[in-house]
Amino acid sequence: MSKNLLNITRGLNKKPVATEALQESIQKVFGLTGELFYGYPLIATPDGKYSIDATLVSPEKGLVLFDLVEGTVIDDYATRQDDVANKIEARLKLHRELVAGRKLKVPLSVITFAPAITNVAQLSQPGYPLANEGNLEKILADC
Image 1: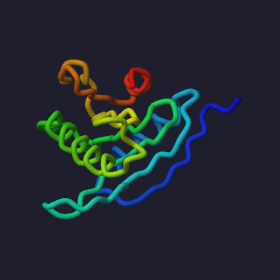
Image 2: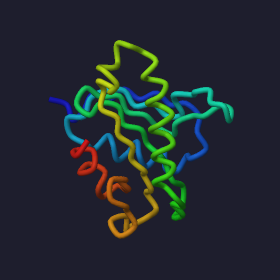
Image 3: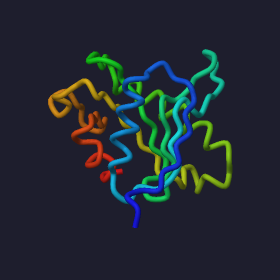
Image 4: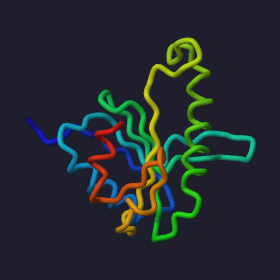
């Protein structure tokens, strides 16, 4: 059996170092299948175009959105996670086949991936996963 069956589509984002680190790290996760997109989806919002840094669509994990951080400044990453989750959830809820009652049928998770930060455990906030190469597999296992 192969390590994983991920198809990767590279679009444009402004975070090349974090993008490359995520790609290397996620390919090491055993048994992960699905589609990994960088720079997609691109959605229209009242504030203009908005693209997601990286998106994993996986039968095992559902929909995992990645907030990528270049460098060591994470700022208010919890607010960014809430923002991206709310934007995508609102778009998905427009499709009846993805909704049961008022809830999405597809699990939705958001992970901030900051490869340059070594002390992610000390900086993470409860309910807002913060990952680097060392703990990405464990955080994905919790999805």
